[in-house]
Image (cartoon, rainbow, N blue to C red; front, top):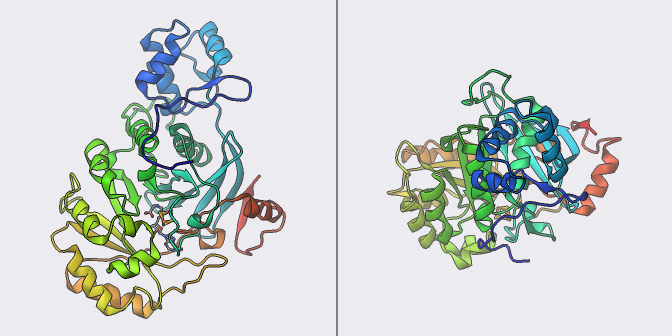
Length: 392
Ligand code: SAH
Ligand code: SF4
C-alpha cells in the first residue's frame, strides 16, 4: 500500500452488519448521508451536535430527534466506537489506549495530563513507512493510513474514557481541562496521510462540537516538505518539525526522509510556513542521542540553522525501546546543549519523558501483532512492575 498524501474521497467504513459509519464525515458528507433517508440538513446539524458536542454513542440517546427518525438512523448507520483492547495508566498519570479498528489493526493514543490541561497524542497511521532509526514505530512491518473516522475515534474514545464530554446545558465552547490539546505525534507521519488528518482535525476544530482551537493543535512532521505549506494554509495548526540532526550526513543516517528532503529544503519550508510568528513559533524536536548528535558543536550549528525562523527547540531525551541501538545523552550533556541554545535566545525545555513505564513516551508507540500477543498475556501480570493495567 502506498502511504502517499493523495488520498481519495473518504468513504466511511461499513460495519460487519452492513451499516455505514457516520463518524469522520464532514458536515456536507453527513448531510448527504442523511439525505439518502430523505432527512433535511437541519437533521444533520442535530446529529452533528449529538456526535461531537455530546459524544453520544447510540442514536437512541439523540433525544431531540423523534423516535421514528432515531430508529431509521440506527437501521442504516453506525456511530459505534472502536474497541479498546488495552488501557494502561502510568505511575505519572499518562494513559495509553490500544484501539482496534474494524480490520483488526490496532493503533495507540496517549493522554498526557498536566495540572490545568491535557494533551492527547494521536496516531495518523498504523505503523509508519519511514524508518527513523531511533523510533520504535518505524520498525512496525505493517503500515496503512488511518481514515478520518479512525483518527477522530481516538479523540472520541479518549473523551469517553476521561469523562471529558461537557455536561448537558453547557455551551459548545467546551474546552475541558483534561483534554485541551491535540498533538499529532503518535504513530505515523501525518503529512503522508494529509487528507484524512485534515478532515479529522477540521471536525475536531469545529466550534459546534469538540471545539479544540487550531492554536491548541500541533502537527509533528519528519519533514515532508511538499506538504508543509498546504498544512499551514489550510489548517493553520502549530507545526513541530523532527529535526534531530544538523548535518545531512547524520540526518540521512537517522532519518531516511532526509535523502528526499535535505536540511536546506526543510529549513526553507519552515521559513515559509504560513502563520508562524514570534508568538506562534515552530517547534524543532531534537532527540538527544549520546555521541551521535549531542556535541556542543552540534548545538552551535543548530543555532545557525534556526536563524531567521520563529523557533523554539524541544530537546527530547531518547526513549529506549526493546532492541533499540542508541543511548540517551547524559543529563549533564543535555543541560550543556540546552545552555548553548539558551545563550542564543532559545529557551529549550527538555521534554520530560512521560509514560515510559508503559512504553507510551515519544517514539515508543508500536503495536504489531507480535507485541500485542505478548501484551495480552501481560494484562494478567504486567511485565513492567510500574505499569498498571486499568482494563480490560
Ligand atoms: N512522524 C512524526 C510524528 C510522530 S513521532 C514525526 O516524526 O515528527 C513524535 C516525535 O517523537 C518525533 O519528534 C520523533 O522523532 C520522536 N521520537 C521518535 N522516536 C523516539 C525515541 N525513541 N525517543 C524520543 N523521541 C523519539
Ligand atoms: Fe515515522 Fe516519525 Fe517514527 Fe520517523 S519518527 S519512523 S517519521 S513516526
